[in-house]
Length: 120
Picture 1 (cartoon, rainbow, N blue to C red):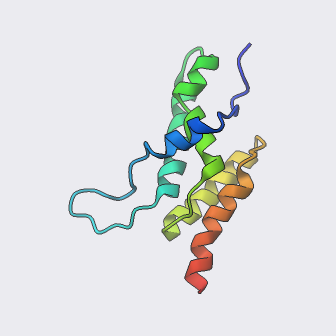
Picture 2 (cartoon, rainbow, N blue to C red):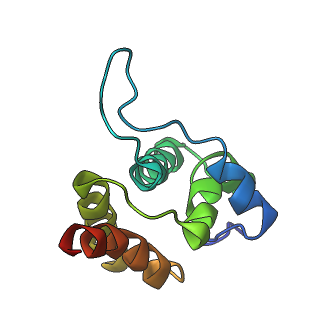
Picture 3 (tube, one colour):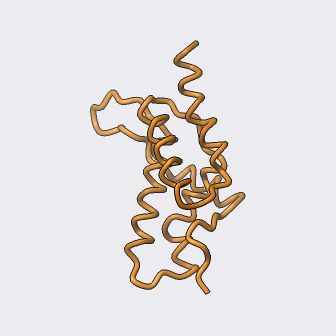
């Protein structure tokens, strides 16, 4: 039996995954501000796309696709850009339409951290 699509990894796997994320917008010569939350949201979307593209997904496919980035959501870093904050909130709106996401409050807090800093 396949695991639910939104089965999450926890603990060390999630923290380890955070260290593998590229920094958003760091193209050569780009003055863009790195945003690890935006990178994480992009990794979640890419993992979803990879899983959904599989002809016969199974439990092992989760750890190769969306599992690690979704697990990392439970340790979501604060957004450092408006784009990252907005994308995180947009991602949650999309996800919460069809599934429960335990990390939702953590991701919301990570997105709001940007707006809290902007208002200060």
